[in-house]
Length: 118
Image (cartoon, rainbow, N blue to C red; front, side, top):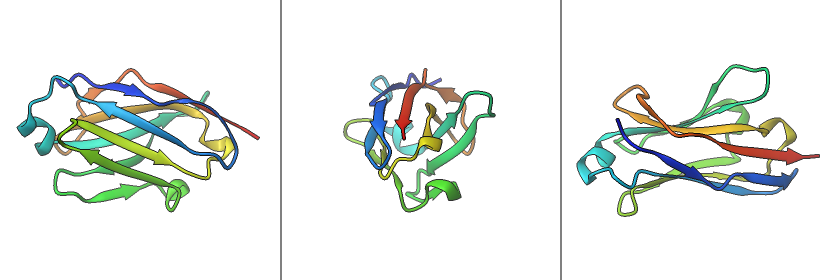
C-alpha cells in the first residue's frame, strides 16, 4: 500500500483551471518510479470513471471527454503526480481520486472535490 495525499480541489467557474496534486510522501524512489498513477473521478449518482493515467514508462492516456484539456504529469523528486485541468466544464464536477499500482490501481487517496459552476 502507498499512502497518497490529494490536494488542489475547489470551486471554479466554467472555463477556469485547477491543478490537482497527489503526493506520496512516504514512498521510496523505486516504488514511485516503478508505479503507474491514475486519476479517477466520481460524480454524484454516477460510477467512478478513469480520467487519466501515467505509466512508469511515461505513457499517458486520457478519457475522451478530457483530451486536450487535462494533463497528467509526475515529479519524481517530489514524489508527486499532478492533474492540470484547463477549460473546465460543469460536467467535470466530481470527487477526484488519485490511485497507484503496478498495471492496476491498488492504493487510493481520499479524494478531492472539484466543483465547476456555469
